[in-house]
Amino acid sequence: MAGQLIDEDPQLAHRHAVAAKQGAPRLPIVREAVGETAYAAGEYGEALSEFRALRRMTGTDEYLPAMADCERALGRYPAALKLVREGLASGPEVPTQIELRLVEAGIRADSGQADEATRLLQREIEDIGTRGTKLSRARLRYAYADLLERTGDVAGAERWFVAAANLDPQGNTDAEDRLATIRGVVIEYDDSEDSEDSDEPDGPEAAPEDE
Image (cartoon, rainbow, N blue to C red; front, top):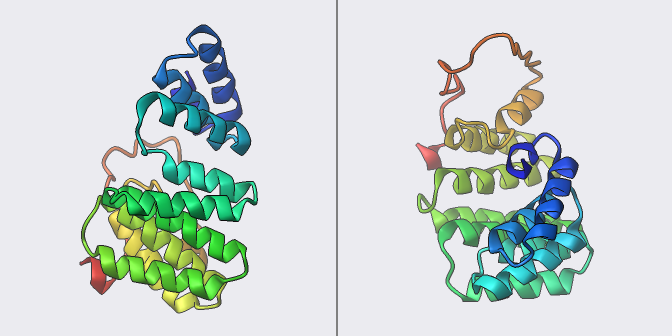
């Protein structure tokens, strides 16, 4: 139930996960569910505690990006950056590396260093190239586009939202919506029709880096 509800009602999903924890507090999958639903519900202190427990139980560093982001959300930037550095020093897989860089860029932006955050993501896009999953590369480009728009480079933001959308045909990010907003397009959704035949969006061509 927690897994089914996390996207549409994270608070209710979290209550289900907490109920599961009461019955099986030592199962890693239960602590993972509590941590993820707490994170989705904005309960960052609780999520951080669960991710720490999960790390002790499993020995995995998989949740270091989420832990760092919890510290960032709680305003503890030095602790967040320490976790980012720890994660990057371990030589993580590309998707995890990207998530760590996204947290680092978020900290820079939160600290009033938007230009530095932009440069950080630009360098990461160049260094990663075509490595990693499409979704992780889409998230990287989406974050870069978001920063460009926030710093006034609307044309650049449009270009990189296009790149993100072309790497994310399933719409895990809202790159298509952000792109439509920039272009002044109103998107109307009709939930009455089956969308199974429209897996690929009729979007613009990818940016040169993602062709």
